Structure formats: structure tokens, C-alpha cells
Length: 229
Image (cartoon, rainbow, N blue to C red; front, side):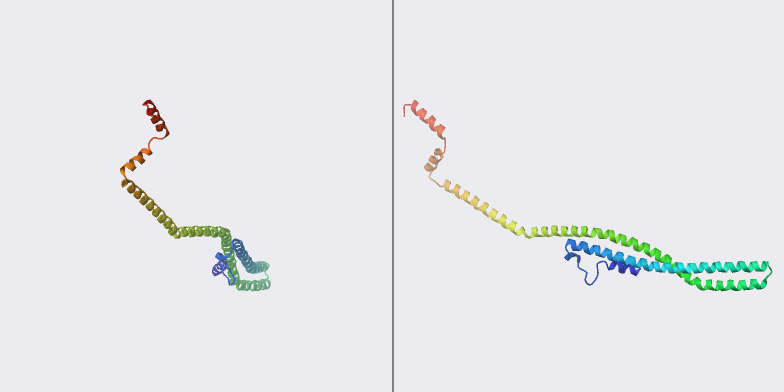
């Protein structure tokens, strides 16, 4: 299983591999696609190697079945010779049968090993294809995940910038408080000045502020009625 970890571990490793965070979007997507392409090429190499091993296993199986048939054939000939009371022919048939049996015994360990290897390779190929399919699906989401991470980073930086700009907000608020304080002081001085002014002058100023054009007209009319024009 070490092959699998090496295969998938090489996806983003290498002496000349760029770090994803320093790539622009186009380069990042191209790098992802290149990695997937390399994985598929390695899969094809493994498929060819597995095909050679399975082909060797098939040849051993074919040889084994051949010598099984030879054994059965000579065994049948020996029986037929005995039925015809030809012991010498039966003996020679059994010798041939034993030669084929010896060949079978020689082939047996290799055939057992080839069968186990073939079964193991087929299972590993299934696992490998499934893992590469999964890696390919994940690769399609990497760009979207990267963009989401970068957007989140921008938001975090903006929020951090707002916290740094609190000093400017505080300065404006301090200025506003100063202006409000000065306005209140001006009003207080104005009321104080009005309080210490000459009463007659203050009354005349207050009366001067009362009425208007309508009152002046009524006042002239009253004077006319009283003969005080």
C-alpha cells in the first residue's frame, strides 16, 4: 500500500512545484490539472505492469491445465492398455503420465503464487482507480475552496482594518464633543450677559421685539380715535 501514499503524496510535492498561495487563478487551475494528468499517467503505468503480471499468470495457468490434460490422457491410455492386456504399453503410458505429473508438481507453487498475485493486483487496481477518481473529484473543488478561503481572508482583513480605524472615529467624536462644549459655553455666556444688562434697556429690547406690522397698524388706529395723531 506504500505505492498509494507515494502516488497521492506526489500530487503537490516536487522540487519545482509552486506553492498554491502564490499562484494566480489560471496557474493554480493549470497546476491542479497537471497533477491529475500525472496521476492518470501513473495509473496507466500500473495498469500495464499489472497486465504483464496477469498475462504471466495466465500463461502459467494454461501450462498447468495442459499438463493436467496430459496426465488424464496418459492415465486413460494406461487403463485402455490394461483392458487389452498389454501391460508393457500400460507401463509406458504410466511413465508418461508420471512425467506430466512431475511437471504439474513443479508448476504448482508458481501457479498458486500467480493466482494470488493476480487476485491481489486486480483488487489493488480497483482500489487505485477508486482513489484516483476521488482525488480527481476533490481536485475539481480545490479552486472553489481556494477562492472561498481568499474571500474569507479579505473579509477578515477588512474587519481588522476597521478596528484599526477606530482611532479616527474616536478623534472625530472628540472633535464633536469639543464643539458641543463650546456651543454650550457660548449660550451660557449669552444668558449671563442678558442677566446683567440694564433693566430699562432689556425691557425696551423686549418690547421692541413684540408686535410687528399688525400691532403698529392697530396702535395708529387707536391714536386716531383718541385724536392723538
